[in-house]
Length: 211
Image (cartoon, rainbow, N blue to C red; front, side, top):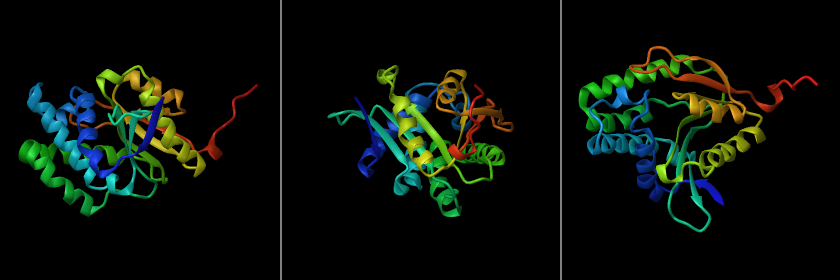
Protein backbone atom coordinates (compact mmCIF):
# COMPACT_ATOMS: atom_id res chain seq x y z
CA UNK A 1 0.00 0.00 0.00
CA UNK A 2 1.28 3.46 -0.96
CA UNK A 3 0.85 6.17 1.70
CA UNK A 4 1.09 9.89 0.84
CA UNK A 5 1.87 12.51 3.49
CA UNK A 6 3.15 16.10 3.57
CA UNK A 7 6.95 16.18 3.71
CA UNK A 8 8.63 16.94 7.01
CA UNK A 9 11.71 19.21 6.97
CA UNK A 10 13.91 16.14 7.46
CA UNK A 11 12.43 14.58 4.30
CA UNK A 12 13.67 17.31 1.95
CA UNK A 13 17.17 15.89 1.18
CA UNK A 14 15.78 12.46 0.26
CA UNK A 15 12.89 14.04 -1.65
CA UNK A 16 15.33 16.16 -3.66
CA UNK A 17 17.36 13.06 -4.50
CA UNK A 18 14.24 11.31 -5.85
CA UNK A 19 13.36 14.32 -7.99
CA UNK A 20 16.93 14.60 -9.27
CA UNK A 21 16.86 10.98 -10.39
CA UNK A 22 13.49 11.45 -12.07
CA UNK A 23 14.35 14.73 -13.83
CA UNK A 24 18.02 14.25 -14.72
CA UNK A 25 17.16 13.69 -18.40
CA UNK A 26 13.90 15.66 -18.58
CA UNK A 27 13.79 17.47 -21.96
CA UNK A 28 12.40 20.68 -20.48
CA UNK A 29 14.70 20.83 -17.45
CA UNK A 30 17.96 19.80 -19.14
CA UNK A 31 18.57 23.15 -20.91
CA UNK A 32 17.78 25.05 -17.71
CA UNK A 33 20.40 23.20 -15.66
CA UNK A 34 22.91 22.72 -18.47
CA UNK A 35 26.06 20.60 -18.50
CA UNK A 36 26.73 16.99 -19.58
CA UNK A 37 24.97 13.94 -18.17
CA UNK A 38 26.51 12.12 -15.23
CA UNK A 39 26.83 12.23 -11.43
CA UNK A 40 27.86 15.89 -11.40
CA UNK A 41 24.77 16.91 -13.34
CA UNK A 42 22.46 14.89 -11.07
CA UNK A 43 24.01 16.58 -8.04
CA UNK A 44 23.32 20.01 -9.55
CA UNK A 45 19.71 19.00 -10.18
CA UNK A 46 19.44 17.73 -6.60
CA UNK A 47 20.66 21.05 -5.20
CA UNK A 48 18.22 22.90 -7.43
CA UNK A 49 15.24 20.91 -6.13
CA UNK A 50 16.42 21.31 -2.54
CA UNK A 51 16.40 25.07 -2.96
CA UNK A 52 13.05 25.04 -4.74
CA UNK A 53 11.31 23.09 -1.98
CA UNK A 54 12.88 25.00 0.91
CA UNK A 55 12.10 28.40 -0.65
CA UNK A 56 8.38 28.03 -0.02
CA UNK A 57 6.51 24.78 -0.74
CA UNK A 58 8.01 22.82 2.17
CA UNK A 59 7.05 25.53 4.66
CA UNK A 60 3.56 25.76 3.13
CA UNK A 61 3.02 22.01 3.54
CA UNK A 62 2.54 21.47 -0.20
CA UNK A 63 5.37 18.99 -0.77
CA UNK A 64 3.89 15.48 -0.75
CA UNK A 65 5.96 12.32 -0.35
CA UNK A 66 4.91 8.74 -1.05
CA UNK A 67 6.12 5.66 0.83
CA UNK A 68 5.12 2.06 1.27
CA UNK A 69 3.11 1.63 4.46
CA UNK A 70 5.52 1.07 7.33
CA UNK A 71 8.61 2.13 5.37
CA UNK A 72 10.72 5.28 5.72
CA UNK A 73 11.98 5.21 2.13
CA UNK A 74 10.57 7.97 -0.08
CA UNK A 75 9.42 6.52 -3.40
CA UNK A 76 7.96 9.62 -5.02
CA UNK A 77 7.52 13.35 -4.54
CA UNK A 78 5.03 15.98 -5.71
CA UNK A 79 5.62 19.71 -5.24
CA UNK A 80 2.48 21.85 -5.37
CA UNK A 81 1.59 25.52 -5.09
CA UNK A 82 -1.77 26.24 -3.49
CA UNK A 83 -4.34 28.59 -5.06
CA UNK A 84 -3.39 32.23 -4.70
CA UNK A 85 0.11 31.44 -3.39
CA UNK A 86 2.10 33.01 -6.20
CA UNK A 87 5.88 32.86 -5.92
CA UNK A 88 6.75 36.29 -4.61
CA UNK A 89 9.93 38.34 -4.51
CA UNK A 90 11.21 36.82 -1.26
CA UNK A 91 10.83 33.29 -2.62
CA UNK A 92 12.66 34.25 -5.82
CA UNK A 93 15.46 35.83 -3.80
CA UNK A 94 15.70 32.68 -1.68
CA UNK A 95 16.21 30.62 -4.85
CA UNK A 96 18.95 32.80 -6.36
CA UNK A 97 21.88 31.37 -4.34
CA UNK A 98 20.79 27.86 -5.31
CA UNK A 99 20.83 28.58 -9.04
CA UNK A 100 24.09 30.48 -8.70
CA UNK A 101 25.73 27.45 -7.06
CA UNK A 102 24.19 25.06 -9.60
CA UNK A 103 25.39 26.80 -12.76
CA UNK A 104 26.59 30.33 -12.08
CA UNK A 105 25.31 33.37 -13.94
CA UNK A 106 24.35 31.28 -16.97
CA UNK A 107 22.12 29.14 -14.76
CA UNK A 108 20.43 32.22 -13.31
CA UNK A 109 19.68 33.51 -16.79
CA UNK A 110 18.29 30.19 -18.00
CA UNK A 111 16.15 29.84 -14.89
CA UNK A 112 14.79 33.37 -15.33
CA UNK A 113 13.92 32.71 -18.99
CA UNK A 114 12.14 29.47 -18.12
CA UNK A 115 10.26 31.16 -15.26
CA UNK A 116 9.04 33.95 -17.56
CA UNK A 117 7.81 31.47 -20.16
CA UNK A 118 5.97 29.34 -17.60
CA UNK A 119 4.36 32.31 -15.85
CA UNK A 120 3.17 33.76 -19.17
CA UNK A 121 1.10 30.61 -19.84
CA UNK A 122 -0.35 30.08 -16.37
CA UNK A 123 -4.06 30.78 -16.00
CA UNK A 124 -4.97 33.83 -13.92
CA UNK A 125 -7.79 31.97 -12.18
CA UNK A 126 -6.66 30.67 -8.74
CA UNK A 127 -5.67 27.00 -9.01
CA UNK A 128 -3.57 24.23 -7.55
CA UNK A 129 -0.30 24.18 -9.52
CA UNK A 130 1.75 21.00 -9.81
CA UNK A 131 5.30 22.30 -10.02
CA UNK A 132 7.08 18.95 -10.04
CA UNK A 133 6.28 15.27 -9.63
CA UNK A 134 8.80 12.45 -9.76
CA UNK A 135 9.09 8.78 -8.86
CA UNK A 136 12.28 6.87 -8.11
CA UNK A 137 13.39 4.41 -10.79
CA UNK A 138 12.91 1.38 -8.52
CA UNK A 139 9.33 2.42 -7.69
CA UNK A 140 7.97 3.00 -11.17
CA UNK A 141 4.99 0.91 -12.11
CA UNK A 142 3.78 0.62 -8.51
CA UNK A 143 1.15 3.35 -8.75
CA UNK A 144 3.20 5.92 -6.86
CA UNK A 145 2.51 8.74 -9.31
CA UNK A 146 -1.19 7.95 -9.27
CA UNK A 147 -1.23 7.98 -5.46
CA UNK A 148 0.56 11.33 -5.33
CA UNK A 149 -1.84 12.92 -7.80
CA UNK A 150 -4.95 11.46 -6.18
CA UNK A 151 -3.98 12.72 -2.71
CA UNK A 152 -3.70 16.39 -3.61
CA UNK A 153 -6.44 16.35 -6.26
CA UNK A 154 -8.83 15.12 -3.57
CA UNK A 155 -8.05 18.34 -1.71
CA UNK A 156 -8.61 20.38 -4.87
CA UNK A 157 -11.98 18.71 -5.44
CA UNK A 158 -13.02 19.29 -1.83
CA UNK A 159 -12.25 22.99 -2.33
CA UNK A 160 -13.95 23.02 -5.75
CA UNK A 161 -10.64 24.25 -7.17
CA UNK A 162 -9.09 23.65 -10.59
CA UNK A 163 -5.53 22.40 -11.11
CA UNK A 164 -2.80 23.15 -13.63
CA UNK A 165 0.52 21.65 -14.70
CA UNK A 166 3.03 21.44 -17.54
CA UNK A 167 4.03 18.05 -18.94
CA UNK A 168 7.14 17.44 -21.03
CA UNK A 169 6.47 13.83 -22.14
CA UNK A 170 3.57 12.05 -23.88
CA UNK A 171 3.68 9.25 -21.29
CA UNK A 172 3.10 11.66 -18.45
CA UNK A 173 0.34 13.41 -20.37
CA UNK A 174 -1.54 10.13 -20.60
CA UNK A 175 -1.27 9.72 -16.81
CA UNK A 176 -2.52 13.24 -16.21
CA UNK A 177 -5.34 12.70 -18.68
CA UNK A 178 -6.57 9.77 -16.62
CA UNK A 179 -6.83 12.17 -13.68
CA UNK A 180 -8.95 14.67 -15.56
CA UNK A 181 -6.33 17.02 -17.00
CA UNK A 182 -6.96 18.39 -20.49
CA UNK A 183 -4.28 19.55 -22.92
CA UNK A 184 -4.36 23.31 -23.50
CA UNK A 185 -1.35 24.41 -25.60
CA UNK A 186 2.44 24.02 -25.76
CA UNK A 187 4.41 26.40 -23.56
CA UNK A 188 6.54 28.44 -25.97
CA UNK A 189 9.66 30.35 -25.05
CA UNK A 190 11.38 27.72 -22.90
CA UNK A 191 15.15 27.34 -23.42
CA UNK A 192 14.65 23.75 -24.64
CA UNK A 193 11.55 21.63 -25.21
CA UNK A 194 8.02 23.05 -25.20
CA UNK A 195 6.05 21.27 -22.46
CA UNK A 196 2.28 20.94 -22.75
CA UNK A 197 0.10 23.09 -20.50
CA UNK A 198 -2.72 21.03 -18.98
CA UNK A 199 -5.81 22.14 -17.04
CA UNK A 200 -8.14 20.23 -14.76
CA UNK A 201 -11.43 22.10 -14.22
CA UNK A 202 -12.97 22.45 -10.79
CA UNK A 203 -15.78 19.94 -10.14
CA UNK A 204 -18.43 22.63 -10.53
CA UNK A 205 -17.03 23.57 -13.94
CA UNK A 206 -16.94 20.10 -15.48
CA UNK A 207 -19.36 19.16 -18.22
CA UNK A 208 -21.01 15.77 -17.76
CA UNK A 209 -20.59 13.42 -20.75
CA UNK A 210 -23.59 12.93 -22.98
CA UNK A 211 -25.49 9.68 -22.62
